[in-house]
Amino acid sequence: MKASLDFSRDFVLEINEENRCVISELKPETIFNFPQGIPAFESTKEYVFLTNENVRPFMFMQALNTSNLSFVCIDSFLICQNYEVQIPESVVEFIKLEQPEDALILSFVTVKPKIEDITANLMSPVVINIKNLMGQQIIPEESRYPVRYRIWESIEDSISELKVG
Image (cartoon, rainbow, N blue to C red; front, side):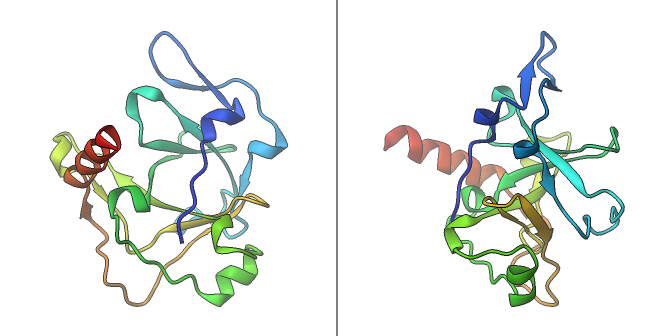
């Protein structure tokens, strides 16, 4: 189940001189709703996604009402080519997901000082219905994927394949 969405087309951000992400125009169609919040941040329900060409393929999931709350994310399929995720029926119904291609699957990233130590949480992905902009993080009881998946080698391999292809 792979879906891809280029958030930079939504004109949510512009890059200023310091190469930071800045919200320039906020439209209803660029606000993503997490009705249950993110675990440990349940009171924060609305987010926007910000991109910056200098840090692609990473993006920032910025909370709207909590300025100091932001998650670094990446497309789970980009870092793990054979990634498989089972979305529980309760989540499918909750975010009103009708087609697999309407799902965007993201992983939260833990940034470390050494680039090779950067990890992503493949165990508990974020599922977003790109049709209605609703999302939820899946917290499975069991998973064959780790919470701290070392991603840098996978990203380098994917970029190399894109350049060759």
